[in-house]
Image 1 (tube, rainbow over the protein chains, first blue to last red):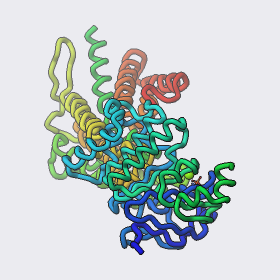
Image 2: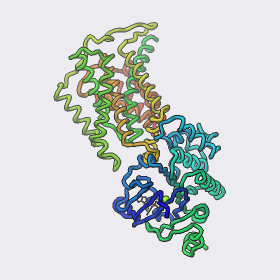
Image 3: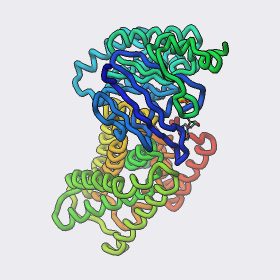
Image 4: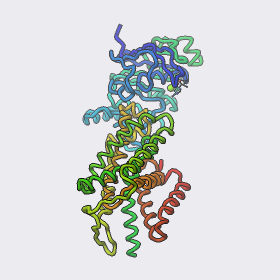
Length: 238
Length: 286
Ligand SMILES: Nc1ncnc2c1ncn2[C@@H]1O[C@H](COP(=O)(O)OP(=O)(O)O)[C@@H](O)[C@H]1O
Ligand SMILES: [Mg+2]
């Protein structure tokens, strides 16, 4: 069995003492696309925040590439090689696209490396090149999402975590954005994806986890999950 | 006509100085959402430092602003680390009370140590030096302080708008959590911002002693004026602070001359009330 790149081991999380994650475990192997699916409020974002260090698990362990990152603070996560594109994009609204992208590589000091990454992400999202000088909040929803992903790539992460990319996007755009995710993965970045668009997410993922009220209730190859009765009934309305 | 030009010039020079004081407050407010009630008292500390450097060691204000700028940067950073960082984030009240307490402490410390007396440095390099343009008398201490404040403000503006560190400061102001995700150590950004806020009044206070008296209440008035300027210019906006400061400086000078000296602050507060009622975000607010 291959060693997992990321392993989340029975974590518990709480907000102001109210527990919301009850012993969730999951694994991501190098090179995979893994999807976490579940309804609104199930705890998907909380799991990602715990990995990113924005919230500290009350119990359990998170190990990334052999290193315990359970207590790593948010600002140190990116140096580990993990990038988190949060739900709702969270662009720096009054800064330009260019400045947002530069901040994505804030921990990188070498100018030529930053330039190289900038060229790469602009090649992936050519529309952003045209919008480079524009204030982020004036972008359309789809452009904002692309900018958020591009910003997340600017640190050159080994693992990128994408939270609800589809939120507020038209179906046609969702498809396009997910195609880009496949492309990012093909170029060598491991992907952990969180989605309420269960079908779409499981179609591009290798494996998936179903989360319900803070517990992983089902896991397995994405294809099997798509065919399982529970997923079909609960999330696909079939 | 000459008197009018004279009053306008005096007002603008005062406004430039106000702008630097207000910029520090605006920066802290804009980034951290904290009203720094001890900002004026920090200015007072800088003035005392500059005064005593001049009085005891013969250092002229045109040099001692460096010392007071550095000292107040450190004082700001220390105040953040020891006091502010411990009470920030939960609700708005604790940092408010903490900075208020700090202002009372500093004011009373100076009252106790240095007495309530007004003190003014004698024989500074620029003191009493003037020159004429047309019919207008330009005082060198005021001119140097005004121009220098403007240069410092420009440097601060450049730092915030044009450098990666400045973008990180802005990012922290807009969305602290997202900034953390970029690898920005936002606690250190807060520390830096409190230090920079201190440096603004440190530099201003250091320069001011070349023509203004220092006393334990001097910070209260300047702090209040800085607060008005920030509210008028828009919270967190540096060019807003500059525009508002020039307006306040002008209004103060014009009202003081054409109505009566005792009316100058009445006019300043009136302008403030009118603008804030018409446009609560301030002139350049978000
Ligand atoms: N900042 C927060 N403070 C308090 N409760 C929260 C916070 N964020 C999320 N929750 C609660 O935690 C649970 C899981 O939320 P979340 O992880 O955002 O779910 P999902 O991403 O799956 O929609 C929900 O019940 C939500 O109300
Ligand atoms: Mg969520």
